[in-house]
Every structure is written in C-alpha cells, then in structure tokens.
Image (cartoon, rainbow, N blue to C red; front, side):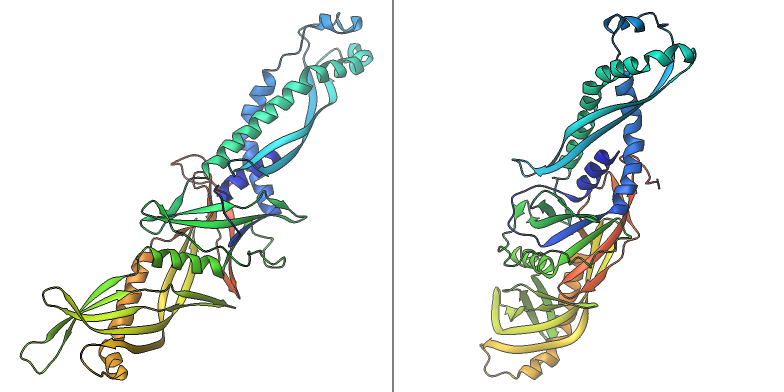
Length: 412
C-alpha cells in the first residue's frame, strides 16, 4: 500500500501555514517507505477487502450468451491488481494534499473452484466482464483511502508543544521533492508563546540538507539549521522568557549586609554557533544592580557576554537542550551612580552568581524539550541519535507505529 505509506509518512512530518524559507528539512528515506508500507497494509487491508467485496458483479444476463449458462453458485479466485499514480501538492490552504490519477485495474488469472474445463472457453469474456465491473469502482475505493490519508495529514496542522508553555509549528514550504533515494520536505518553523506568534525575520539563505548528510539506513533524517536554533532563542528572548531577578547579600562596613537586587534582562538574543561536533551559545544579558528603597533604585548597569556549551539530545519525538558553563565571561560597566567601579572587582563579586543563576534559569526553561516534526498518535521515534555539523544538526530516527491512541507502541 505505497499510497497509504506516503500519506502516513507525510502526516508524521508536516503542518501547514504560510512561511518564507526553510530553516529545517525532513528527509524520508526508502527504509521509511518500506516500513510504513507494512503499517499501511495492516491498517487498510481489511477496509479495502470489505470495500472490494461490496462491489457487486452484474447479472450474467448482461454478458455474452455463452456465459449465461454458467452455474451462478460457482466459486472462482480472481487476481486483481490496481495501479495508480500518486501526486502530492500544496493546496490553497497550504496543506500537503495527496491525489491519484491514471488509475488502472488489471484483472489477472482466474482460477475456478470447480468445473475447470467448462470455463476454459470463456475465460477471456469472463475476464473482460469482471474488469468492466471492477475498474471504476475499485479506483473509487482507492481514492477513498487516499482521502483518508489526507485527513491524517491535516491533523498535523496542530501546534506542537514547545517547552512548558509555548508551541511550535513546522510549516511545509512546498510539496515534497522526490529524489531517487529519498523524499525531501523543506520546513519553516513558527513559534508561539501565550497563543501569540513570535515574529521572526525572514531567512536570507534557505536551508537544504547536503546530499551526503543523511543516513540512508535510518527511516527519517531531520536536519535543523543553525538559523533554526537562533530563531528559537530569539523567540524566547522576544517573549522575555530569560529575564530574572537575583537577590544578593553583600558584606559592607555597616553592621548589616547590603541586600542588592540584580535584575537580568536580555536586550539582544543569544547567538548559536554550530561547528563540527560542538555547539555553543553566546549570551548577552544586561544586569541592573540596585536596591529596594522602597522601589527598585538602579545603582549600576553592567553589560555581560558569556559563552555556554549547548547540549543537544533527542528523546522520542522531542529534542532536549541544555546549557553548560564554558568559562568565557566578560563584564563591563555600562553606567554607574556610585562613582567609578572596577570591572574586575564586580566580576569577583557577582560573576559566579550571574553565570550560575542565568544558566539555571535557562535550563529550567529548556527542560521540557522541543517537539520534533511528528504526529504523535501515529508514530513514535526510536533509535534516535544526534550529530552536530558546521551549520546544522542531524537527527536520524526510526519510526515505531502506535496501534492507536493511548495504546502501547508495537513493532511491525
């Protein structure tokens, strides 16, 4: 059932919305089509058998005279094959839609259950009669199955979970691109926080997986560009998700230590850099140091630049990110209401606290993960791995069919 296989695979990987250029791509390998063909056969074999069994063959009185004398209760086995071309396009709602054309029903061998000799002289006429009865109706049943796949693809338009409170959509930019060894699907991500779409500047250089990048032994290879990660952190920064307040006690010459408040804001987004085998994030927070008196009174404003190692992992249908301290940390005084202050002294006082609290805040945000392109009620991802390359991340996955909503996934 290759038609159903393509429909199921596309339903795993697409959602719909208007977008500009790709920042990620899904590559569907031959292994996925082979696997999902088996899934589709199991899923559609019984409905198709019922549909074809419901197609009645007209009374033999409508066929040539030499067939009308045949036993009406005679059993026979007829081999029938159905061939159709499948097309995938982007419809007016920007959903990927499957359709079939050039559908052809081929009636093969006829094996009588009995009275074999009496049928030999009329097999040609009988085959033509059965073909006339099945041709149009069988193709209509195949079209019905294709339409059912379109309804599954449409379910992938739902927004997927992003961290604890956000959502993400993977937007197909065109119909799938068919190559000899795989099917490519260019995607653009859209991020939402508080039900509001976060505006992302259009890409200047659309992303495409290098031909040699994908692992053809896996079912699907998901490629995420450096721009994808920058857009993700830009969306979080725009939503103010990284901002935090740090309470800090500082010893002074007075009997009681001075209670300082460190207000951390991110006026510019973090920058992600992907190199072979490693990923880093450069953070640019501004720290306002002040006191509550009774409102917040700013005494110092600091510009900070710090680098963290970005850890990338995949767990089923989610990508997990975390940050680890790398050690590069610079601090400069942007403004001061307490006179000249040495940057080194401030770094000694606040550097460790700033790094620890910022990374803790960001890891708390990231711990719920980012949904990868998928349709969770159909497939899980298994055998996942992550490979970081210059400019992009590869996540090869295998598919595992889920028998139904809420049921345990089983291998086919």
